[in-house]
Image: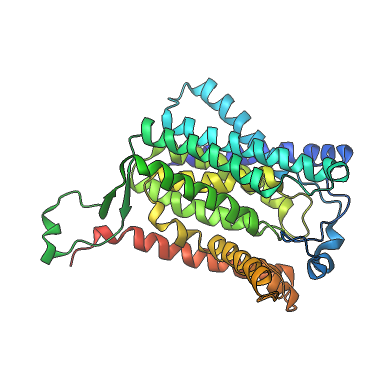
Length: 354
């Protein structure tokens, strides 16, 4: 374990040393929004959002590039120096951040440099969703074919009256999905990608929640002896902690879609490869609530012509009610931590016997 924490620390220092020069480079390249988008998915004006966040125009969006680039470069050096075994699980994790990071990067480019020419703010949603589904199908197929995972494990305690106590390696209720697991996993990945992206709207909010969720899955991966996953999470966590220093309020840099898409998808894939996906909606409960608040708002405005929240997603609703941004962020972090503990408890239910 001390080696893992050593890797985390080295990754933190590695990203930390790159951060200031990289942020300065982003300013020189003007990799930032020159104007704030003020229309929602239905094409309607969002004056509340513009009032709350218009002053942040000019903050660079390249945090995802920094973290992903640091993770890939650090990992390349680490594997070259140590000759550590690079297995299929590691390949899937790295492929996830590369594919979804590339999609997010293209979306960022369109938002920053292309919107004046195209008249549209980033990739159109249907195109973005289609590409996400294709990438998720690739990742899900690899999990199914290379790792042999095809079941959903629902964490339930052993129940004597059902004779489950006779099962020595009881892990919970196993639902074998067969080849349909690929479609299930695809849904999870795409859903997590967009939920994370929606949550990434306040300084430090999504990154802090991601670190909380990663800590929970780190613990669960440790119980299952997923050394490859833990190693990857150590590198990622160290890099995210360094980035977090510059991302908390008032942020000097944002994740952008590069990071938001990559890390949302990655969180889902970590849950899938550790077969802990049943508790993902709980450990990542804040992401779920944020996404649901946005969907509810969209449907209400489209069908009823009325809003349910002052502004969506939910964190903007609380801002519109008068909460300070830091107050919203820290309370959402706290909610994320409580949900993470609940998720871990539920994941450990199979160890109980009644």
